[in-house]
Length: 151
Image (cartoon, rainbow, N blue to C red):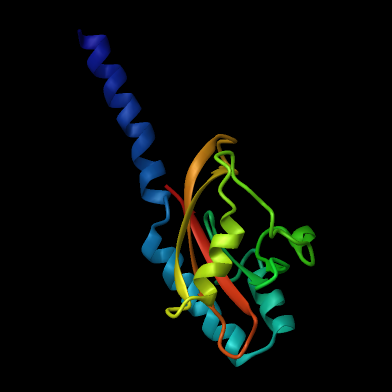
């Protein structure tokens, strides 16, 4: 019995730091809105430099921002610049959800913003994990900004 309690306590101690490091939906939305303001006050070249700076304000833990146009072209990917200038319109999660199309639909909606839920491979665990991404259309542009968090 004592060993079971000890194991449970050790497990809890291991999980607590992970939960403290996990970013939240609110942080994802805040980062996306901050990045939206940055793009609208600057240009895409300045945004690319800022968003892809690993020591900058637009990458925090698993949070990063991206900019896509309404045709599904990745204009800026915060942590993987190799994805810049690639099209993701037909990207699906393992359940068949065309989540980029859903992001585009939200950006084109009357509110021009919202959340998209899908399944994606977690970069730290390598496991398929639910993810939710906040998107918001950029003013005077055919693009939107996004920031997601694993649940």
